[in-house]
Length: 287
Ligand code: URA
Figure (cartoon, rainbow, N blue to C red):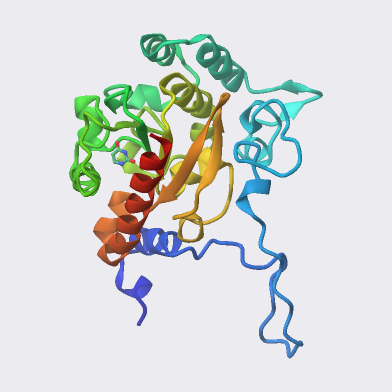
C-alpha cells in the first residue's frame, strides 16, 4: 500500500502533485511493457530559458508572457485571435492593473475588476498583509475560509505555520509582505483554475512591481507555476534561485513548499528550512 492509497482521492491527488508526479521527465512517454533499449534522458530544460519572466540566455521578448498568446492562455480559453486578445477580462485586468501606481490604486483597481467570477462568491477581497516596505515578499495560492472572513492572507492554520517558518529567520509580518495569486477565495478551497489565475496575474505582477521586494518567495506549486510560467513541479522547482521579471521589477526569486503541503507532509519541513536559510543569505548579500 502506498501513501496515496491511504488518502482520500483529493488528498491523494494533492500528494501526487506535491511529490512531483506531474513533472515531465522525458520529452516522450516510454512504453515499459515493450522491450526497447534504454533511452538517453532528455536534456533538462533549464527553467531560465522556459519563461519570459525568468532570465534567459537569448533576448527576452519585451512584453511578459501574460500579455501575449501563451500556451497557458490558450489552455485557459483566453486565446488571442488575429493579434487581438479575445478575452475582454484579461484586457480589462491588464488595463486596470497597468494604470495602478500605488497600493491603494491597485486595491481600487481590483475592487473595480469584474473579470473574475470568484469575486461574487467570496466574502472579501484579500489584498495583502505585512509590511510593503519589507525586502521579502511571499506569494501564496489563494485565500481559504479564514482569510475570506477576515480579508487578510494567511491567517488560518497555514498562516500560523508560515509565521513560524518566517520566525526561524527572525522575520514577522513587520518584516515581510504577503500576497496570493488569487485575491478571492475559490469555493470549497478548491485549487485555482488556470483561467482564474491567468486573469488575476496582471494584478499580481503589478503588485510585485509596486512593492519592489528584494526577494520573492513563491509558496507552493500554484504560486511557482504562475510566477515563473512553468509546468515544472514544485519538488523539482523548489530551492533554486531564479530571476523574476514582474512588470519590469527584476529580482531573485525562489519557490518552496506551501505551508499547507507541510501540514500534510511534515518531512518536507527540512527542505523549507534549507530554502529559508538560502533566502536569508541572499537578503544579507543584497544589503
Ligand atoms: N493559503 C494560501 O495560499 N493563501 C492564504 O492566504 C491562505 C492559505
